Image 1 (cartoon, rainbow, N blue to C red):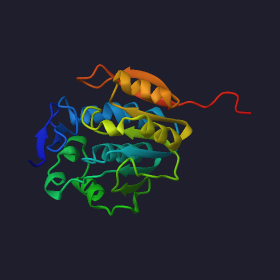
Image 2 (image 1 turned 180 degrees about the vertical axis):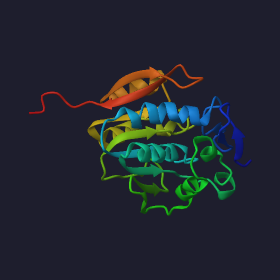
Image 3 (image 1 turned 60 degrees about the vertical axis):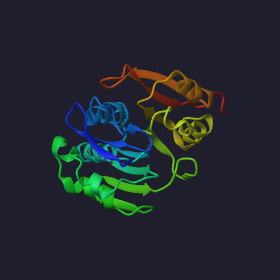
Length: 224
């Protein structure tokens, strides 16, 4: 079986991953979901002029594209790191219709996909992109992040990415005032996050989901 292009309810594309047996986005709308979870409750929830962002799961490039668009609009400098084990083939990413729907040039999306892996690329004056073709278990970073977009496949499909060990790593990679944002609000996931030191904030979910999760990195009390 091969991956295939699908249309979600807001008219935007997603990819059905045949190996995982799951779509990259909600059937209720790829753009609607990404905007709600990662832009409105992630990027736009921080009042800084410069941000370090880590994305878990580059996938179709939608989260990256939307963040690039907002960075330019708000004149915020973003250093964006994203990891992906299995990059999409050109036959898939070249057909994605995101740019038509959000009003930017298709070349912006193609540039994200065709940029070299393992290298930092200056997309424009507000956006620096580093793509890493690796898995989360072996990923190592010396950079501390303001936000982590945790956009892995669901815990049912990729349970190895929703563990105590992984969330401890994510906790360590955040700045003291940083947070992780994800579409997932399963009880076991929230309890696992809390066990490694996150403060759990339950937020209203995107269409089709009642809730989503923001996990704040707690600053230890009595540090001095």
